[in-house]
Amino acid sequence: MLLAGAGAAMAARRARAWNREQKIGKAWPIYDRTEEEALLGVLRSGKWGRIDGSRVAEFERQYRELLGAQHCVATANGTSALIAAMNAIDVGPGDEVLLPPYTFVATLNVILLQHALPVFVDSDRATFQMDVKQLAARTTPQTRALVQVHLGGATAGLDTSLKFCRERGIKLVEDACQAHLGEWRGKKVGTLGDCGTFSFQASKNLNSGEGGALVTNDEALFDRAWAFHGNGRARKITSATLSGWEMNGANLRLTEFQGALLLAQMSRLESQSKTRETNAALLTKHLKQIPGVTPQVIDEGCTRNAWHLYMFRYDPAGFAGMTRAQFLKALGAEGVSGSGGYTPLNREPFLARVLESRHYKKIYGDARLRRWREQNQCPQNDRLCEEAVWFTQDMLLGETREMDFIAEAVAKIQKNAGELVKKV
Ligand SMILES: *Cc1c(COP(=O)(O)O)cnc(C)c1O
Image 1 (cartoon, rainbow, N blue to C red):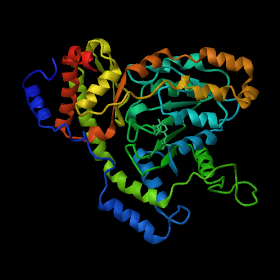
Image 2 (image 1 turned 135 degrees about the vertical axis):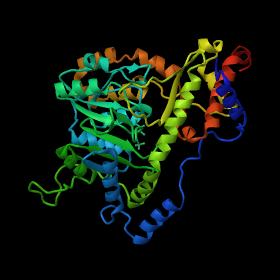
Image 3 (image 1 turned 30 degrees about the horizontal axis):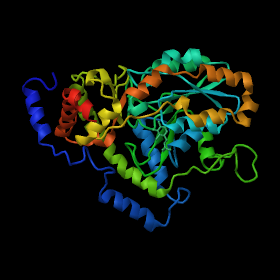
Image 4 (image 1 turned 120 degrees about the vertical axis):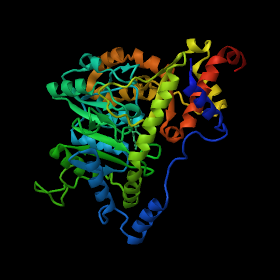
């Protein structure tokens, strides 16, 4: 079964050589003198904001080259990159926006901030991504945009969603906040739809504490995103303005400190990504052999997974009826910290309250909101939220024997589940 054969005996020895008191993976963030000097350089220059300095602009240039995108605007965080996207494609009251229910709350919040109507498209439990086969059933003449999330760093069904959106004039925003260097058929995710958004928040694979970026190949969209992120000031003044304010906007600018930090961190991204890929493949090889554990399926079009999250589905039936909560606790006792991941976003009480607000009633009317409540069912996602188990990207930066150790811990719990379930 698990780790069968001679290679397995070696893997088991490697796993035992790992000390369970040690943290699995690498302490995150990872930095050295490169980052220290980059930050001191900005400090001593006295040019701390992008309006005066050059680090953010240089980061935008390098990031867009890395991704193969024509344009990039850095933002204060991933949420603000999504807000800039919503405004650049002109999502507003009365518009409907499609999104998956299996995502971070920011994907939903940016739609609500525009007073647009979020419409959830159920998940595919195998891939953990949005089930693109269900797009048509959720689309109406009011559908303005789709926010497709490359969850955990992988993506699925992008050919279908791109074609679907193109045929109907729906804008496709790629929420690639977890998918730095992820690819779909050899092209970087974030560059395939109308625009893509990234997060550089502390937990993400590319980190400046807080930070974000929007990339696009559409110059008009870029102009609007650029203007929006700087209180509406245009890159090139094209119409009559009193003071250069071309449109409404906000201040979503990144600081020079973060720009310098990102330039340094970016030099580590490719090698870290390779380590995650190697370790994820190893984990999958081991975990696939354990009853009750089903690793995430990667769509054949996803030619590179950023592995922000390592995800699998847990089935109590393979573990003598042990609940997921009990399994996670047992795993923690073995020195491996896993998480149960997201709860169903479409069923959040705060969302129901927003849709009952006087603003939403005024914009959409009682009949549309009633229909929304009736249709707001994502049964596959409800199940996924109960069966998911996640490991974080920093764990995937460990050594081979640490991956062996994780697999051994899961196998051990599975083997002893009958006994354990009586104790926990
Ligand atoms: C992290 C994240 C965001 C938000 O990014 P912040 O930088 O935290 O604002 C949005 N969407 C997804 C899928 C994310 O993982």
